[in-house]
Image (cartoon, rainbow, N blue to C red; front, side, top):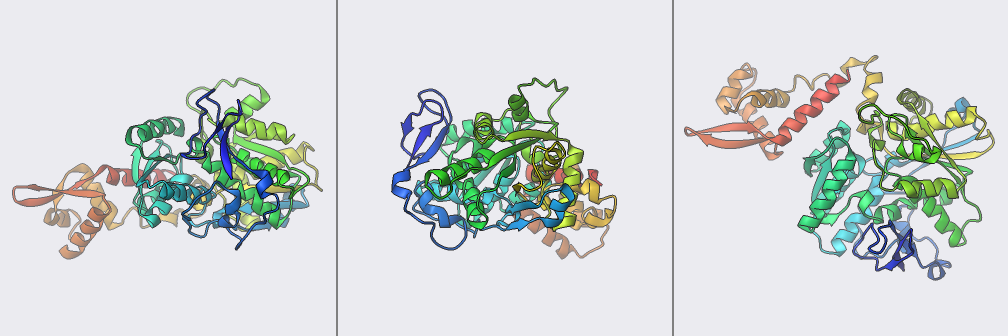
Length: 465
């Protein structure tokens, strides 16, 4: 009941395989529903992502880890602090891997299974890599994740534990996306990069469907922006509800970016910002230099008669603590920016105290590393034990030189039995953090690139303290 339609020239293509560029004009493609066939159809089933299956592009397989159906909290204490009577938080941290991207992973993996793919590839600066890794693990697919140099350690840890194949490429996710596009073309793997697969927009529009069922239509819907697809997907969801005759008004969309990397805001304000060096923000989830879906984000803001605002990292971290202390929700920096933006707009009387506002909390603060900068001032013991763990000590030794088991036991100070050391080595080997090679009749252990990435992640965490 859907086709792919170009957002620029309106050319129509078959729904599968998913493509993101129009072959006629190069414009971005999106899925379009057959509204006439769906107008009388109701949402069906339990309150979760697949309740909206009839309003998504057709899939035969249903990959699920009980995603969707996330809470909509009325944030009374936080709203009182800001000066808003009707503030709500759409809490996507309650998804299986703690982010809104689980919706996308569910639909992407379902489609990959339909099309008989065995390997999926995606470029990501965090959340989708974690989500896709988990869903691929559950359904027996290989997940190849391409990450930039800067990535939240918590998200990287998820990818590692779900056994994804991880490749580092580029300073920011922009370069990673280019790499993922070329790799999919060369290998024939399923392209799961959110910017390169319009099924992602379809999956994320269900956030709007859920808010409609939980509350109705707010006056404002606030979304942080990286590549621009998330704010557009929510807007698309509300527009579809309008076209289906389920609602009679639309929200104003408020797009938020960090001042250190705000290309969509700059385009919206029609300003050319001079940036010395690389764009930078600690809200890594929205660190995107050249957003592929910028025009879609601008379309959502302009069509909705909304607005866009940039916030500083200090404002983001202050908002992150406010959300946690006043509402008990630990939000990642990227989505805490929505609260910081609200404060600005309320102070400038752009949003009034009686208007209803929904902020999208995209992911958990447990995935992000930089919040530890603030927390470490009060509790430096947050990661005590990591520095002295046996496995880390072994990796540190092997990072300097290869060694055999007995030698490692001596270098560790003979503080445990030799079988215990070999148990640690076996576990590191099974996780792909060390490898073996024979030399002079002895088995030498050698650290792998994956092992070095783990040490790097530990070092980055310690640098925050």
